[in-house]
Amino acid sequence: MPVSWANSQIVYDALKKCGIGLVSALPETWLVHLIRMAEDDPEMILVRLAKEEEAIGISAGAHFAGTKSALLMQNHGFLASINGIVSFAQLYRIPLLMVISYRGHFGELDPWQTQGGSATEPLLRALSIPYAFLDDPKTVEKRLAAVQTWAASSLHPAAVLLTRDLMWEE
Amino acid sequence: MQRIECLRAIYHRLQDCLVVTIMGALPTELQSLGHRSNFFYLQHAMGLASSTGLGLALCLPEQRVVVFDGDGSILMNLGGFTTLARYRPKKLVHVIFDNESLLSVGGFPTATSTGSDLAAIALAAGVPQAITVRTPEEFTESFAQAMDGNELTCIVAKVEATGPKGYVTGLSLLENRFQFRRHIEKITHTTE
Image (tube, rainbow over all chains, first blue to last red; front, top):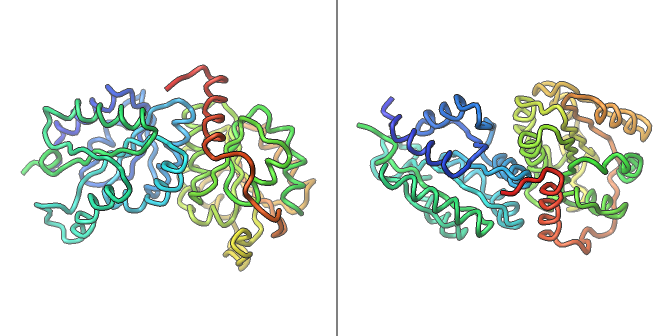
């Protein structure tokens, strides 16, 4: 599978460096290594979901409990979570670090991903959710830390988009 | 059986746990019995009260967590049953007040009014204990058992579709949220 193990490890290490103690996830191709890394890490609480919107509640519970969390989701999972983001995270000022695999953008071969690829950034902007691209292994750690810091200080959702350049090796 | 009768009967047991509720009549009735800093009312995002309880329970496994859910809310997150069952936090008690109705929007019947059985769904999802109760005595007894036990338990309480006239209380959403966070910080001495 040409998903980059090395770059997934860089993303995972960056999450750990931010102090993330819980990750929720719904499996998707680009996230498989990240989920395995969370599974193999005895210090990480991994919550496998049935649907991504559950993650908003789980991260809110973690925040109340004093645990920093991250949400691993495909961009279609972000689309499926929007009511939870708006009427829980934004309504109640819950910080969220959404780590979103940016499927369906330029270079995507799977036709079924493409519509969601076009909708992702416009929807993030419509919801006033700031986002950064993780596209270069050299800048992953710094960017992820900056986004996590902002989410925690603003008490608001923020996102990083995992791009094809970072996640896919061909 | 009235929901508020059930809440009144077990209110004294809620002192030392973390309580998460759904929106609508339930939080208004619970607040009418007396708001506490360990109560969090999720006044929207239907379906996510149980997920919030799971997040709390996974991060604070020593804390007793009580979720007060409703049929309309849990029907929006039936997959959440499977996630709860997967992690089956031992100290989480999941109460679902089932009035077979979306009461706050005019009382339209939910699928539990035509036979969908939430306790059976919970059991089939893998929740280790689930029971349906129909009288205040049964409710009080099963709640006490769940609180004294050490296993994820789902209690479906069949209640009448009645509630207070209005739902807005004097407690602001953000005040409640920060108070709840501070409460947990105090009892666990953690800061994020």
